[in-house]
Length: 199
Length: 199
Image 1 (cartoon, one colour):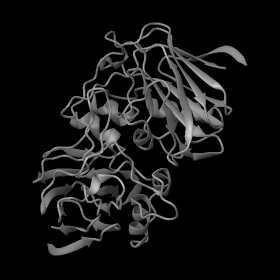
Image 2 (cartoon, each protein chain N blue to C red; image 1 turned 90 degrees about the horizontal axis):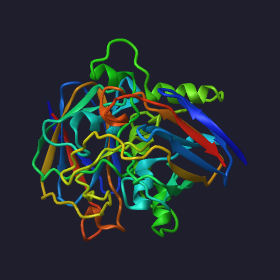
Image 3 (cartoon, each protein chain N blue to C red; image 1 turned 45 degrees about the vertical axis):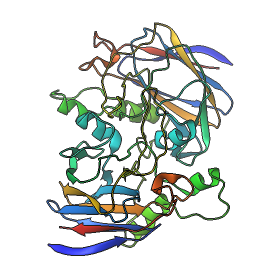
């Protein structure tokens, strides 16, 4: 067991290898930060946590405590064991990318979760074969009865955590979302760091 | 202009090449059939219609008339010009696959939309590099205020159509969903054929 606190730096990514039957604690250190989260089968990166494949199993568009999360081969990859936050997470919005910030009027480069995924995996010598829909932990995107979406700040408290159990050997990647134009990382639009523990 | 009526056979797929600025008319011949629908950039199959990338642009989880649909590089690929049906389509459930039918208790092989995608593309000499979240045309998956989903029959009428405008040269693939266990292809659970016209 390793109780080291691993930082996901503000605006940056981090990837870790985690063996089957470990637990990954994700801590929203300041309460305001969205963390794009991916999980890949460590033995075959073409298999990964897939939201469109998980939804039929859990019967919801976002996960709640106790839910088993599935891969694109419909095998369990993670279980959501604990969630001290109100359980508001997003699974319908893509990771931000260089194209997204152009649409938002940014000139030149802007940090983004897609590049963070590739950079974090590269630190482990890996290249993700595709960019799956992430589990956007703590991202608050309410879906209305007519299917409309809103972009709201997280409702987590400082120190809130989620605890995930690994159902296979995985490579997990995280990005502390650098979105500083829309208030999805809090009304201050100030991306900050989060932390991990591998238990 | 080619007014030929192209069949998407019951339980099977069909792929077509369509040039930029053409129109694709999808006809729900019997009104009860879901059609999983994909669009790939004909010049680069790694770029394709992406629902997680489209939702931020249209502000909804499902498309309505007038919406521009975007690729994973956030470029326009299709525009939804007309929809004679009530506009109930799904974008949150994966294409069915061999794994899905095992979970539903099927022993042995069951036709499925993922294999139909590969077979239809293979008829054009193409292999899709991944299986994107499809636009499940006419699939009725209401999302409740708590994020729960239901599996309901289509609300289309026989002969209802949608008309799509192509914003780039595309390869489009369609699968008349072979789901015959859940009532998503009507309460009779009887998959049937649909039709296309390229205008």
